[in-house]
Amino acid sequence: MLLIPLSAIPAQTLEVVLSQQACTINVYQKFWGVFCDLFVNGAPIVQGALCLNNTYLVRSFYLNFQGDLFFLDTQGSSDPTFTGLGSRFVLVYTAPTELPDDYGLSASFAAIDVDA
Image 1: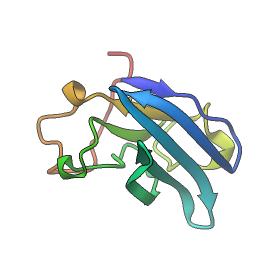
Image 2: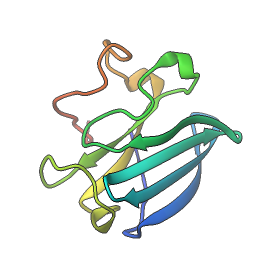
Image 3: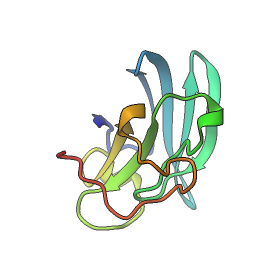
Image 4: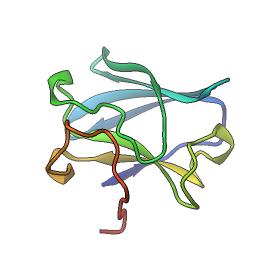
């Protein structure tokens, strides 16, 4: 697992390489919560995904993204808000080999051990 650095600002764009994929990640606060867009080589993978605690953003192999992303509340179980991005709420990349056996069948999971 890899922590992707974020800042506590309401809208940001990140350029990062994840498992040899050139990714653009937009993270932005709207009235209903924090949302995320993910592009690989300029092609959209997910757009307007609501970011929830411990919930994968991509969720499916058919979208052809290697791995997945999720937000983790390091102080509890709340969904992210921009004021805590990069501190309380961290964005985590999970490599394909780290995905759970039931990946693609269930988008949520109970607990993540980021120190493993």
